[in-house]
Image 1 (cartoon, rainbow, N blue to C red):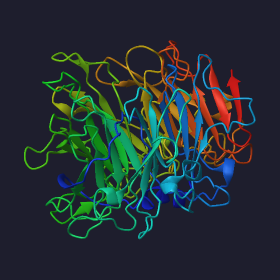
Image 2: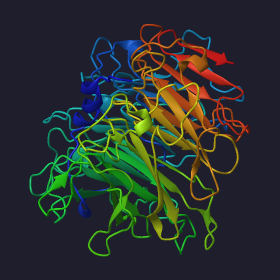
Image 3: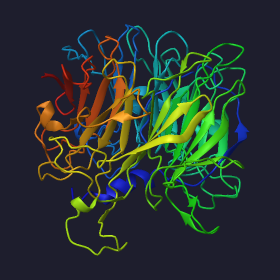
Image 4: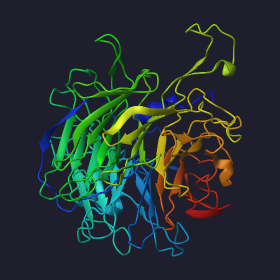
Length: 599
């Protein structure tokens, strides 16, 4: 492709009020609010958008799966933060579709609202009012927050105004029940609301709830909820970002870390907390309870990284890793790109680790995150999975091979190559018994051997490869696959139609399989016409909607407006080597409340 809506691409991160850090320390704690626990899931990285879409034409920007009615089938939640509610722009809504043995289902009962949730329906704060720009549904997480045996849905509204400040943010919890999600303040505590002032002094523009992720970071059996707040102001008055941790154990207090003011990173607006992901990267467990200890990855896609001179910095982005323990999360390592000959971690300070990729301004390393066990290994001491971390770098530039150069040199670097901006890349760092380590890390882009006939283009400016990620065992081979969204890819001359790569897990050489084994999806393969600005693959998710034990892949095409509005596809997992969608898929058309199946 040649062009991409750069205003939207950067607004997705700039409107998140993304800001700068390096490491963290526990700063504040507040009284616990009973009834909260959670589990991990894939998170979306950003909250901004230039959409002003009413109703069904609002894009799906977040996807989560959970069993909200306890029937053994996972249900799909689709976050649409740009949804207009009663002509209130960008108030936001969440669509919920329930799973069954036949996959996703709807109802023919006209009295049923097909589970469209907004803040009016929740009676948020008892007022029943929605506000412009709340962006309810910008982030989602699933878990049994009140531990009643039914999974619940956490929903971020990073644009929610408090009584005194704009865009301070909010998180709502809708609890599950035998009849599914039930939420309102007057419904026997079936709904909870978390706001910033519960924890610390509030301020404007913090965007609390920009990202959500959950897991058991203490190994005590009480899952915890991590909440990204990339606009947090630190003790020095700098907008450094923060992460709130709402602990599931009621003997603990909710915690907040602030990151910044350390010697290596002097910038602000790093976006710390814009993306979150949970996994057990070292395969450890609590020695007392014997339960696994989850770790937390935090993306700071606009963080500064020192380059050469002590006062020379590149805004390439970082990802910080916090290791779970019986005492809670502790900083372990900080990763950034620098294309080193020997990937290493510094042996002092906060363990800065370098992985492959050219370090450049605007790379947005850490804009999206996903966790999976791509090589199927485990910790022999605990028999627990060694999870791996995929890191989206949608702003990564790329030097084309000489055979791909469209015009003769010389070029600026004098070597006869052509440079393309914002092509995108994905770094994969593999788990070990000592956690994530830079050795054997991989970097993937559309010049790694992606020569599929359904994708005539290769590395091109503005593709945004890695803008969205999801991981799951889509082909039932006991190794996770990685789905990579390329929402701004041109197809057959149609700009920004978008596509999704599925890279298969592999047990050899800590790698992921590509051509001829990778699968590439676009709208044509799902019986849909290709349209410009579809942004197919702009949001991804993974879950099991038909209860067959195989993970299904969800793909959103948020702007299919000139056909039927926003579309979400669920590709069923299969034992076929090529992974999801080989036998069946389902497509949800938001504009007409219609569910179709293929092939």
